[in-house]
Image (cartoon, rainbow, N blue to C red; front, side, top):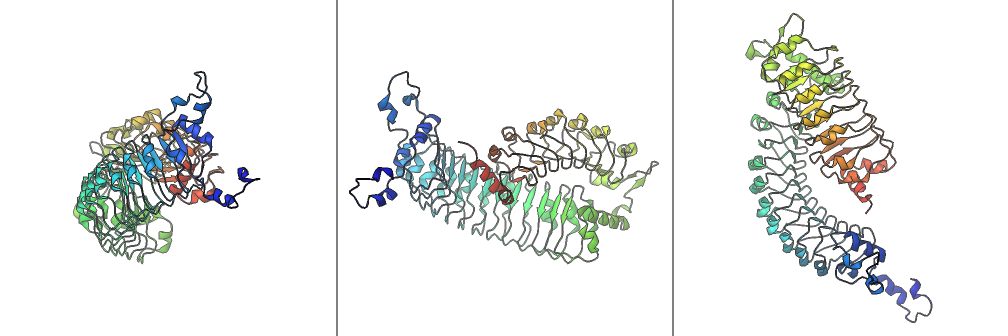
Length: 597
């Protein structure tokens, strides 16, 4: 304003300043010429200043002042702009002059007021990341579909009623978020996006999904929650990499029949499902989490025992009146949610004690009603009085000796399982101080081990010989370290270490690249290294609640595979508790915004 003070003859000059072309501090432009990055987020811009578009082509001022070869800043060595961040402004229009920045690999325009985009966007052929969420876009230029290097496209919170028919040309796209729009259908070329790994279509108006989705064989996560879907095409089972499928808040009347070989998590809460059919249940061969809350299910069929990999079953708010005792035979089930059902025949005090007590009660009913098919011969007694459950060993491939408060596992138990392809071992709730060495006898088949609630002080390297392991539960022990050989477990997907004595994030976990879930709550961990954590490209759940973290590095926000990050109960001051409480997406976005540029 100072340049308009004093002898200003134009009485309107003060008002003209407000509409003058916005300027960018010269120091920022100068730094951007060196670094190739320019961050103009949150500056109240209503348009992109012309000198930003022309950054690569205008001769900088210093060139006029000093052209000697001894100059510290050699203007002729400037770098083309590759990263332009313009988020959280009030930009209403993007000019065709964007074509003057052909070196851009990242363009962030989220949280502005754009209602359209220029066709010149299609000329940015190096673009890999395009963020357009939280605008007012009702269409996308078809030219955008020629961006052959585009990897990530975020479009959530716009007014889009359809996506361009040529969208399928984006053959290298790995992430697409088109949630919270007004989409009624998907383009027929959608199935050509063969590199996609994450697809978010929730909060739209989709009434059906095209069969061509089956061609997306690299998609791991598909979110179609909050739409108008009445059925799911069986062809989705050809999505060989699909691990997480969200179908909450739709109009489904049946559980989808989806023999997708990798499907671990299926969320179908808030639909109109009345019946669980054997045919559908038997398809879910790898399922770990099944959410069926807020439906109209009346009966839990005996065939639920087919889901041998199930760890969490949510049946909250249905119409279930009784439970099959066989539910207790699910070897890995550790969370069963039943609130809001008109259950009869099970006392309220048993229900209120939680999953383990309820399953124990149901197991008691199994013993009262022996399996008629094998004459009730489910267990045999051995001299040591160890009950060896032949049915569990032969049919469920389960070796269990749990809740005995035993200091060691009877040899007879291992002898009784000799030569069997044991897949699951449950030795939880004992007094074990070391890992039973005979576990290695099952190294060719053993995929899940539960040694929780024992007194383990160290974890024997022997456990690292179990090369088929996918899940290991070591909760509630006295561990403070893990063996470095654990990185040899190349199939390990989840590890539970809550309530131990870890003072730092176990080094070997940074090197165990197959991990998807790390639960490390209630320890004394004081720091985490995001640069090493980023190597865990499959990690989707990280629980570090109730530790001693004094600060949270903003770079943790760059661990983009994380879908669930828990940090409650740590002594850090930032981010504030209110931000942590908003959930993972908001927390990660906050952390990214704090990364110094």
